Amino acid sequence: MSATSGMNGAADASGTTGTGGAADASPATAANPASDTPPADRIRVLIVDDHPVVRRGLRAMVDELPGVESVGEAGDGAEALRLLDGGPRPDVVLMDLQMGDGMHGVEATRRITALPSPPAVLILTTYSTDADILAAVEAGATGYLLKDAPPEEVAAAVRAAARGETVLAPPVAARLLGRVRAGGRPALTQRETEILGLLAEGLANKQISRRLFISEATVKTHLVHIYGKLGVDSRTAAIAAGLAAGLIRPV
Image (cartoon, rainbow, N blue to C red; front, side, top):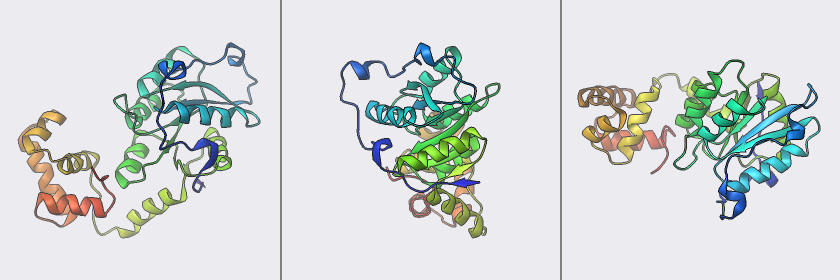
């Protein structure tokens, strides 16, 4: 297992949003024709992020690396899937998690890794809660990096992912190790974590059932399991416990 530590520099524009203009109008960017038939030993990277400034910074960084080249950009998961369907197949996809109203990174990762001979998906995000990490890993992500690491560590992670190695930023690895060591409290399932997050948004049982297309009785059953696993007996206590444990993000 490879590990990387935090990143800054050109690759990091996590808090910067796009400012419009021609460059922002088309979030998906196809590869240059000249790069359609690169040498076999080159690592090809697709960049998926909803912020144009971040995409440009990552693409500049990737294209400066020896033996590595970007083959496209996408503003969300759906754009990435379209590029994969009709364009050059990358070796590695650098994937953000939250991308506005577009298809989010976990769902895109799940669909990409289900493709025949899929590329490695390397999550590159600002989010490091247990819920985010576990959802990405369960969806098939090869690695999970945070956007506050230096470019050279992103580069090392891209190369490792292309070799099929698992890549985890140290804070992410520490969180996963802490969960294993804790051992005494069962982890929430992905559905239970999803319901806990909706509780934190203030949704009632009926609203949760409509959002998730499940019955209200099923929601109540999940809540019983959530309360039991967290050792609480109320919605408020469950939300507080989930936030304290890093299972959900603050709303």
